[in-house]
Amino acid sequence: MIQTSHAISGQQDKLTAQLIEGFSNLKFSSELEPDFQCYQGMLIKRRLPMVAVFSLFLLVMYALVDFLFLPDNVWQFTISIRLGMLIPVVLLALIMIRWMQRWKTIVLTTCSSYLWMGFGIIAIIAGAQLEGYDLPYDGLYSVLLFGFFLLGLPFRQAITSSWGLWLLYGVVEVLIGHTEDLLSQLFFIASMGIIGTVGCYLQEHTLRTGYLKHQLVKLSRQQAINDTQAKTQFLAAAGHDLRQPINAINLITDALLHANDKSNQSMLTERLSTSVDMLNRLLDSLLEYSRLEMGAVTPYEETVSIDALMTDLCQTVQPQLTNANITLETHINSHAYITTDSLLFERVVSNLINNVIRHSKASCLTVYCQLSPQPTNNCSGKLTVIIQDNGQGIAEEHLSMIFDEYYQVVPNREEGMGLGLSIVQQLTALLNINLRVNSEPNKGSSFCLEFQQIPILDTDIKPPERAEHV
Image (cartoon, rainbow, N blue to C red; front, side, top):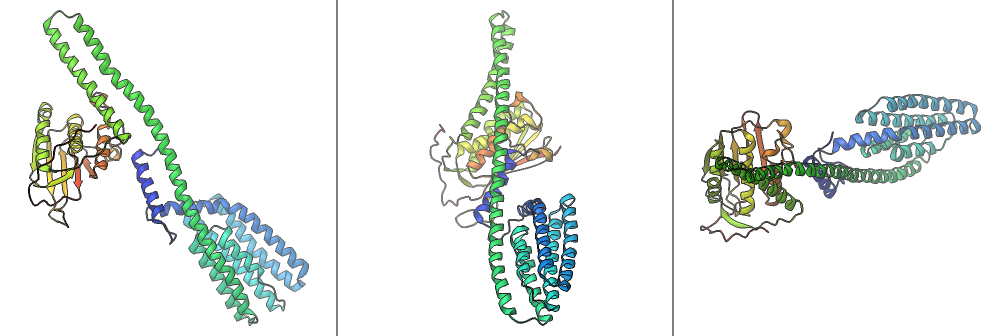
């Protein structure tokens, strides 16, 4: 499934935040950890065939050494134990490679196989000693190397199992009464265990770092593919959409040149004006979007009355709403001031209202300015501006995509190129405004603009002269 640019950006933010925050406890956030565990499980499964072949080689080699150098009563015992170790492990490996997919099952099976091999080696050492032959503990070293490094087990499972085998070895040696030099043996095995613990920790830490970077590269590649597709769509859409009003202007102009009837001239002039207006709107959207993409827009902050700003804006759009048969209701009495770029903020609200006019099929538009009653240090609370309509609403499957470039729930190029809400999202991010949308089919939509910090003013402040954005 191809991810949208918005979804990719969100995942990149989570991965980057995790990379910066670190993971010294070898655990990601609850959102990232399940995916990493699946990834780690697949790595264990992928390395299993090679580990299984190497394990088989070691068992055969040790069995041959037993046969050549141990007394008959000892090698018969040790080889039978090794076969008892080998057959279940080989069967489990075959089952895992062919059928197992769940991360927990893969880790549990691998860990169980590791413990089974360890139990077998301890049984061989103890059995040989009961027969009067003192076997060295080198076999246990080999098994611990598998657990710490070769199997790729998660750090916690690896150290729990490995140190458990170390403890079991010591207990078994005490039970059979073979305590001579036991402390020194346990010390040397513990030394190897400490080295293995540190190495296993560093191994998983490196694996997690590589996973995050790999995912970021993967998402960047997908983003590049999306950008290429978006540019292709942009060129195709821009060429098609701009060609329509230009062709209409050419046809109407040609008709005007040959029209003698004044009534026809008046009708053609009206159509010409409509086509020019459509062309201007398309060009304005394209130019504004391109400037935002290039980072050429810099906010000019000023302190303004939100009530005055919204009242003026509602008066400006009233004729458009009247022409669209949409009733305007306002609840603007917050008495709050905001520090923002008023021109860019007006553009945000204008785009949201134009979106209602063109796409919502609403009969009523309501504008709210609400100030939360919980003041904080130097702030009078949280201000929310709500643009709400009673139109057709937006289905849930479209909500995550309505801010994507060129996306229209119902494609209609005569009403724009699908850049309006994308511009809204970029402008709100530029102005540090939290943008939320709630919508239900046939119940309308509401777009919420939240200002987190509203300054407390001792006296009324007149806004300074506003500079035009170049």
